[in-house]
Image (cartoon, rainbow, N blue to C red; front, side, top):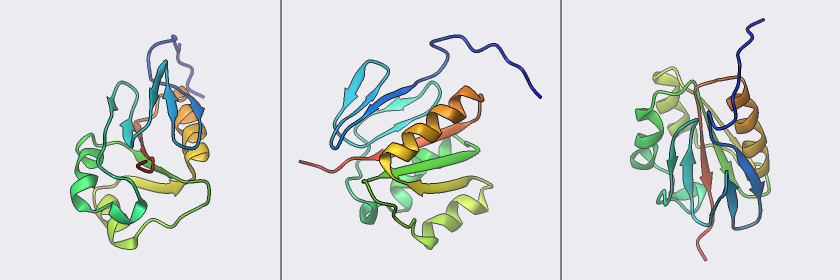
Length: 125
């Protein structure tokens, strides 16, 4: 078992998930974004899972995480197999889940000091 000291502020925490707003630390975000331990990239230009393509995956791949969590909606959605293969070829795990599940999983992975990113897809108004 690996024990590590985890100090508050070492990583971002998703504090609240609402229909069209997610709070990361003290920042309320109302458009899609990417979050990692020390990365917060607001205004990621994706509003539906159908809009996600190779171009929008580049920022996710460039950080070389162990796993990428794709959060979308309130119901489980399938991640397109064509995009899954892009991640798998680079040895990066990818999971698509609801926004709430992705937030919980992200927080757990951060508490374990894992190299993870969450790409949270929020609908446009």
